[in-house]
Image (cartoon, rainbow, N blue to C red; front, side, top):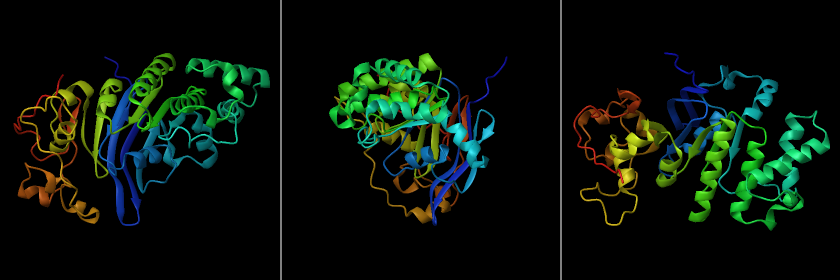
Length: 323
Protein backbone atom coordinates (compact mmCIF):
# COMPACT_ATOMS: atom_id res chain seq x y z
CA UNK A 1 0.00 0.00 0.00
CA UNK A 2 1.32 3.42 -0.98
CA UNK A 3 1.11 5.85 1.92
CA UNK A 4 0.79 9.47 0.72
CA UNK A 5 3.54 11.82 1.82
CA UNK A 6 2.52 14.77 4.00
CA UNK A 7 2.27 18.13 2.32
CA UNK A 8 3.55 19.80 5.50
CA UNK A 9 5.86 18.22 8.07
CA UNK A 10 6.53 20.13 11.30
CA UNK A 11 9.25 18.78 13.57
CA UNK A 12 10.48 19.97 16.99
CA UNK A 13 9.25 23.50 16.37
CA UNK A 14 9.99 25.94 19.16
CA UNK A 15 9.29 29.67 19.31
CA UNK A 16 10.78 31.77 22.09
CA UNK A 17 10.26 35.36 23.16
CA UNK A 18 13.15 36.06 25.50
CA UNK A 19 13.03 33.37 28.19
CA UNK A 20 9.44 32.46 27.45
CA UNK A 21 8.70 29.52 25.14
CA UNK A 22 5.48 30.35 23.31
CA UNK A 23 5.59 27.15 21.23
CA UNK A 24 7.34 24.07 22.57
CA UNK A 25 8.57 21.11 20.51
CA UNK A 26 5.56 20.86 18.22
CA UNK A 27 5.37 17.91 15.80
CA UNK A 28 2.60 17.17 13.29
CA UNK A 29 1.88 16.39 9.64
CA UNK A 30 -0.69 17.91 7.31
CA UNK A 31 -1.72 16.17 4.10
CA UNK A 32 -2.93 17.64 0.81
CA UNK A 33 -6.68 18.38 0.78
CA UNK A 34 -6.86 17.74 4.54
CA UNK A 35 -8.44 20.07 7.09
CA UNK A 36 -6.79 20.13 10.51
CA UNK A 37 -8.24 22.10 13.41
CA UNK A 38 -5.99 23.70 16.03
CA UNK A 39 -7.79 24.43 19.30
CA UNK A 40 -6.90 25.69 22.75
CA UNK A 41 -7.54 28.55 25.14
CA UNK A 42 -6.47 32.12 24.41
CA UNK A 43 -2.72 32.40 24.92
CA UNK A 44 -2.08 28.73 24.09
CA UNK A 45 0.24 29.70 21.23
CA UNK A 46 -2.04 28.89 18.28
CA UNK A 47 -1.49 32.12 16.32
CA UNK A 48 2.22 32.11 17.15
CA UNK A 49 2.48 28.59 15.73
CA UNK A 50 0.68 29.70 12.56
CA UNK A 51 3.02 32.64 12.05
CA UNK A 52 6.04 30.41 12.61
CA UNK A 53 4.80 27.97 9.96
CA UNK A 54 4.45 30.83 7.49
CA UNK A 55 7.82 32.26 8.58
CA UNK A 56 6.25 35.52 9.60
CA UNK A 57 8.43 35.11 12.68
CA UNK A 58 11.60 33.12 13.22
CA UNK A 59 11.41 29.94 15.35
CA UNK A 60 14.24 29.21 17.76
CA UNK A 61 14.55 25.64 16.44
CA UNK A 62 12.83 22.99 14.37
CA UNK A 63 11.86 22.46 10.75
CA UNK A 64 8.82 23.25 8.61
CA UNK A 65 8.97 21.17 5.43
CA UNK A 66 6.48 22.03 2.69
CA UNK A 67 6.46 19.60 -0.25
CA UNK A 68 10.03 18.56 0.55
CA UNK A 69 11.41 22.07 1.10
CA UNK A 70 12.40 23.26 4.57
CA UNK A 71 10.97 26.77 4.72
CA UNK A 72 13.09 27.74 7.71
CA UNK A 73 16.28 27.20 5.70
CA UNK A 74 15.16 28.95 2.51
CA UNK A 75 17.08 32.05 1.44
CA UNK A 76 14.89 35.15 1.14
CA UNK A 77 14.42 34.95 -2.64
CA UNK A 78 13.34 31.32 -2.52
CA UNK A 79 11.03 32.03 0.41
CA UNK A 80 9.36 34.85 -1.51
CA UNK A 81 8.69 32.44 -4.36
CA UNK A 82 7.08 29.99 -1.92
CA UNK A 83 4.68 32.61 -0.58
CA UNK A 84 2.18 31.84 -3.32
CA UNK A 85 1.79 28.35 -1.85
CA UNK A 86 1.21 29.68 1.68
CA UNK A 87 -1.71 31.98 2.31
CA UNK A 88 -3.50 33.15 5.44
CA UNK A 89 -6.96 34.46 6.30
CA UNK A 90 -6.89 36.70 9.37
CA UNK A 91 -9.34 37.10 12.23
CA UNK A 92 -10.44 40.69 11.62
CA UNK A 93 -11.73 40.85 8.04
CA UNK A 94 -11.84 44.64 7.80
CA UNK A 95 -8.45 45.28 9.42
CA UNK A 96 -6.77 42.79 7.07
CA UNK A 97 -7.75 44.83 4.00
CA UNK A 98 -6.03 48.06 2.95
CA UNK A 99 -8.69 50.81 3.28
CA UNK A 100 -7.07 52.78 0.45
CA UNK A 101 -7.26 49.93 -2.06
CA UNK A 102 -10.37 48.82 -3.88
CA UNK A 103 -11.22 45.18 -3.26
CA UNK A 104 -10.42 44.46 -6.90
CA UNK A 105 -6.92 45.85 -6.45
CA UNK A 106 -6.50 43.87 -3.20
CA UNK A 107 -7.38 40.60 -4.92
CA UNK A 108 -5.26 41.48 -7.96
CA UNK A 109 -2.14 42.30 -5.92
CA UNK A 110 -1.04 38.64 -5.46
CA UNK A 111 -1.46 38.12 -9.22
CA UNK A 112 0.69 41.16 -9.96
CA UNK A 113 3.43 39.81 -7.70
CA UNK A 114 3.41 36.12 -8.62
CA UNK A 115 1.98 36.13 -12.17
CA UNK A 116 3.51 39.25 -13.76
CA UNK A 117 3.02 37.83 -17.24
CA UNK A 118 -0.75 38.24 -17.06
CA UNK A 119 -2.25 41.02 -19.11
CA UNK A 120 -4.43 43.57 -17.34
CA UNK A 121 -7.52 42.10 -18.98
CA UNK A 122 -6.64 38.55 -17.90
CA UNK A 123 -5.94 39.73 -14.37
CA UNK A 124 -9.23 41.59 -14.24
CA UNK A 125 -11.00 38.47 -15.46
CA UNK A 126 -9.47 36.37 -12.69
CA UNK A 127 -10.47 38.93 -10.08
CA UNK A 128 -14.05 39.01 -11.37
CA UNK A 129 -14.24 35.21 -11.41
CA UNK A 130 -12.86 35.00 -7.88
CA UNK A 131 -15.34 37.55 -6.54
CA UNK A 132 -18.19 35.56 -8.01
CA UNK A 133 -16.70 32.34 -6.69
CA UNK A 134 -16.88 33.64 -3.11
CA UNK A 135 -20.46 34.82 -3.52
CA UNK A 136 -19.96 38.48 -4.46
CA UNK A 137 -20.62 40.30 -7.71
CA UNK A 138 -17.89 41.14 -10.20
CA UNK A 139 -19.01 44.79 -10.34
CA UNK A 140 -18.11 45.14 -6.65
CA UNK A 141 -14.39 45.20 -7.56
CA UNK A 142 -14.34 49.01 -7.66
CA UNK A 143 -15.66 49.40 -4.12
CA UNK A 144 -13.64 49.95 -0.95
CA UNK A 145 -13.58 47.69 2.16
CA UNK A 146 -15.64 50.08 4.31
CA UNK A 147 -18.56 49.62 1.91
CA UNK A 148 -18.89 45.93 2.83
CA UNK A 149 -20.16 44.02 5.86
CA UNK A 150 -17.85 41.91 8.01
CA UNK A 151 -18.92 38.69 6.32
CA UNK A 152 -18.39 40.21 2.87
CA UNK A 153 -14.93 41.47 3.89
CA UNK A 154 -14.02 37.98 5.01
CA UNK A 155 -15.14 36.62 1.64
CA UNK A 156 -12.86 39.19 0.02
CA UNK A 157 -9.98 38.09 2.27
CA UNK A 158 -10.59 34.48 1.25
CA UNK A 159 -10.73 35.49 -2.42
CA UNK A 160 -7.38 37.28 -2.07
CA UNK A 161 -5.83 34.22 -0.41
CA UNK A 162 -7.33 31.66 -2.81
CA UNK A 163 -6.75 33.48 -6.11
CA UNK A 164 -3.28 31.91 -6.36
CA UNK A 165 -4.67 28.42 -5.57
CA UNK A 166 -2.23 27.84 -2.66
CA UNK A 167 -1.20 24.44 -1.38
CA UNK A 168 -1.83 25.50 2.23
CA UNK A 169 -4.39 27.94 3.61
CA UNK A 170 -4.09 29.01 7.25
CA UNK A 171 -7.28 30.38 8.79
CA UNK A 172 -6.48 32.19 12.03
CA UNK A 173 -9.80 32.62 13.89
CA UNK A 174 -11.30 33.42 10.50
CA UNK A 175 -14.95 33.28 11.64
CA UNK A 176 -14.77 34.27 15.31
CA UNK A 177 -15.81 37.90 14.69
CA UNK A 178 -18.79 36.98 12.49
CA UNK A 179 -22.42 36.24 13.28
CA UNK A 180 -23.30 32.57 13.68
CA UNK A 181 -25.31 32.46 10.45
CA UNK A 182 -22.43 34.05 8.54
CA UNK A 183 -19.95 31.64 10.13
CA UNK A 184 -21.76 28.71 8.54
CA UNK A 185 -21.63 30.37 5.12
CA UNK A 186 -17.89 31.01 5.40
CA UNK A 187 -17.23 27.42 6.53
CA UNK A 188 -19.20 26.07 3.58
CA UNK A 189 -17.25 28.37 1.26
CA UNK A 190 -13.92 27.10 2.62
CA UNK A 191 -15.02 23.49 2.21
CA UNK A 192 -16.14 24.14 -1.37
CA UNK A 193 -12.86 25.86 -2.25
CA UNK A 194 -10.88 23.05 -0.67
CA UNK A 195 -12.74 20.44 -2.69
CA UNK A 196 -12.28 22.47 -5.86
CA UNK A 197 -8.60 23.37 -5.40
CA UNK A 198 -7.32 20.46 -3.31
CA UNK A 199 -5.62 22.74 -0.80
CA UNK A 200 -4.85 21.82 2.79
CA UNK A 201 -6.38 23.95 5.56
CA UNK A 202 -5.03 24.62 9.04
CA UNK A 203 -8.04 26.06 10.86
CA UNK A 204 -7.29 27.82 14.14
CA UNK A 205 -10.28 28.43 16.39
CA UNK A 206 -11.65 28.32 19.91
CA UNK A 207 -15.08 27.45 18.51
CA UNK A 208 -15.21 23.68 18.90
CA UNK A 209 -18.47 23.31 16.99
CA UNK A 210 -16.92 24.96 13.93
CA UNK A 211 -13.77 22.84 14.23
CA UNK A 212 -15.87 19.70 14.46
CA UNK A 213 -17.74 20.61 11.27
CA UNK A 214 -14.66 21.52 9.25
CA UNK A 215 -11.77 19.32 10.39
CA UNK A 216 -10.62 15.82 9.56
CA UNK A 217 -8.19 15.87 12.49
CA UNK A 218 -7.79 18.07 15.55
CA UNK A 219 -4.66 19.31 17.35
CA UNK A 220 -5.19 20.39 20.96
CA UNK A 221 -2.65 22.90 22.29
CA UNK A 222 -1.99 23.94 25.87
CA UNK A 223 0.63 26.54 26.83
CA UNK A 224 2.54 26.10 23.58
CA UNK A 225 2.54 22.29 23.52
CA UNK A 226 0.35 19.79 21.68
CA UNK A 227 -1.34 17.60 24.28
CA UNK A 228 -3.65 15.55 22.04
CA UNK A 229 -3.91 14.76 18.34
CA UNK A 230 -6.75 12.65 16.96
CA UNK A 231 -9.33 12.39 14.24
CA UNK A 232 -12.22 14.77 14.74
CA UNK A 233 -14.67 11.92 15.21
CA UNK A 234 -12.54 10.13 17.82
CA UNK A 235 -11.63 13.26 19.76
CA UNK A 236 -15.17 14.55 20.13
CA UNK A 237 -16.55 11.08 20.91
CA UNK A 238 -14.02 10.21 23.62
CA UNK A 239 -11.36 12.79 24.56
CA UNK A 240 -8.43 11.28 26.46
CA UNK A 241 -6.25 14.10 27.78
CA UNK A 242 -7.73 15.76 30.89
CA UNK A 243 -7.33 19.19 29.29
CA UNK A 244 -9.23 18.11 26.17
CA UNK A 245 -12.00 16.66 28.32
CA UNK A 246 -12.31 19.86 30.34
CA UNK A 247 -12.19 21.97 27.18
CA UNK A 248 -15.09 20.06 25.64
CA UNK A 249 -17.00 20.07 28.93
CA UNK A 250 -16.84 23.88 28.93
CA UNK A 251 -19.00 24.03 25.80
CA UNK A 252 -22.54 25.13 26.86
CA UNK A 253 -25.07 22.32 26.67
CA UNK A 254 -28.81 22.13 27.15
CA UNK A 255 -29.25 20.21 29.33
CA UNK A 256 -25.74 20.03 30.92
CA UNK A 257 -23.92 16.76 30.35
CA UNK A 258 -24.32 14.54 33.40
CA UNK A 259 -21.03 13.90 35.18
CA UNK A 260 -19.06 16.39 33.11
CA UNK A 261 -15.78 17.67 34.60
CA UNK A 262 -15.89 21.01 36.39
CA UNK A 263 -15.00 24.12 34.36
CA UNK A 264 -11.31 24.89 34.07
CA UNK A 265 -9.77 27.01 36.79
CA UNK A 266 -7.49 29.89 35.88
CA UNK A 267 -3.96 28.95 34.92
CA UNK A 268 -1.83 29.10 38.06
CA UNK A 269 1.47 27.76 36.74
CA UNK A 270 4.12 30.39 35.92
CA UNK A 271 5.24 30.21 32.30
CA UNK A 272 8.93 29.90 33.23
CA UNK A 273 8.31 26.78 35.34
CA UNK A 274 6.59 24.58 32.76
CA UNK A 275 9.85 22.82 31.90
CA UNK A 276 9.83 21.21 35.36
CA UNK A 277 6.89 18.95 34.54
CA UNK A 278 3.47 18.79 32.98
CA UNK A 279 2.15 22.32 32.43
CA UNK A 280 -1.42 21.20 33.14
CA UNK A 281 -0.70 19.47 36.45
CA UNK A 282 -2.08 22.20 38.75
CA UNK A 283 -5.42 22.07 36.95
CA UNK A 284 -5.57 18.29 36.44
CA UNK A 285 -7.72 16.05 38.67
CA UNK A 286 -5.57 13.04 37.71
CA UNK A 287 -2.13 14.51 38.47
CA UNK A 288 0.54 12.25 40.01
CA UNK A 289 3.77 13.23 41.81
CA UNK A 290 5.56 12.25 38.59
CA UNK A 291 3.73 15.04 36.75
CA UNK A 292 5.57 17.69 38.79
CA UNK A 293 8.99 16.56 37.61
CA UNK A 294 8.60 14.94 34.15
CA UNK A 295 6.93 16.59 31.18
CA UNK A 296 5.06 13.80 29.33
CA UNK A 297 5.96 13.46 25.64
CA UNK A 298 3.33 13.33 22.91
CA UNK A 299 3.07 9.57 22.37
CA UNK A 300 0.91 7.43 20.11
CA UNK A 301 -1.51 5.40 22.25
CA UNK A 302 -3.58 4.07 19.32
CA UNK A 303 -3.47 4.30 15.55
CA UNK A 304 -3.57 7.99 14.66
CA UNK A 305 -4.11 9.06 18.27
CA UNK A 306 -1.41 10.92 20.19
CA UNK A 307 -1.63 12.08 23.79
CA UNK A 308 0.83 13.82 26.13
CA UNK A 309 -0.20 12.41 29.51
CA UNK A 310 1.48 10.01 31.94
CA UNK A 311 -1.89 8.32 32.54
CA UNK A 312 -3.11 8.13 28.95
CA UNK A 313 -2.90 4.31 28.92
CA UNK A 314 -4.98 3.99 32.07
CA UNK A 315 -8.75 3.70 32.10
CA UNK A 316 -9.71 7.31 32.82
CA UNK A 317 -13.31 6.59 31.88
CA UNK A 318 -13.36 9.25 29.15
CA UNK A 319 -16.79 10.78 28.76
CA UNK A 320 -18.64 10.54 25.46
CA UNK A 321 -19.48 13.87 23.88
CA UNK A 322 -21.00 12.40 20.76
CA UNK A 323 -24.25 14.04 19.85
